[in-house]
Length: 216
Image 1 (cartoon, one colour):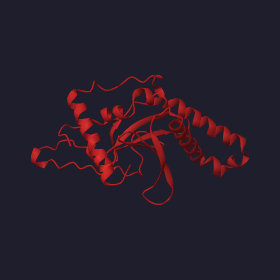
Image 2 (cartoon, one colour):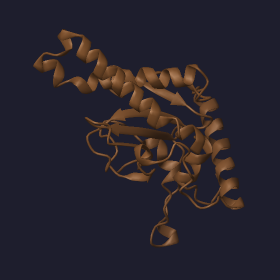
Image 3 (cartoon, helix red, strand yellow):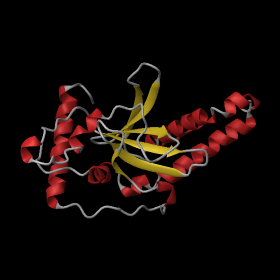
Image 4 (spheres, one colour):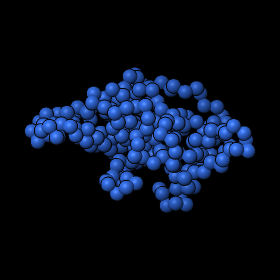
């Protein structure tokens, strides 16, 4: 892997362009509206216990909306249903050229969702230590993963981010996508040639890891 650090934000722009990200707010709004209308039209979803779990209906509606975003080609990616680390169900996993995207309804945008394992983001977390001899080798342990967080009751926020592999904090997180224009301007400085080379090197490593581990 290239010795130059790959910025998670630059890697996100490489995988999901600002134009593709511009589709997120409308997709989320349509999903939330569909979930609210479904609940209003079905008395079984209007009992107290159902109202308190309305987030589940919104989660299903959002999954369907993004599955359609992929299947219609508006997002030129692949998607499928992956099992959680514990066998308690499955979640929608979107696969870009060299990363994955999962979606999570959360009540706060400050931290990544708790249940997800982000160990595969090791390759992006190679912040230098205090002394060069203390710096650890950065290993690629899987396809890097982004998370689209959104919430909560009134769709106040939506962020695409990459979580730290071992700490509950963000390596990178976009601004609030619900407050941006339909065409999202790049909020990062231009990518230098060395950064482009590092991203290409990382993608080569990811492709090799996927091939070696049977992960397409």
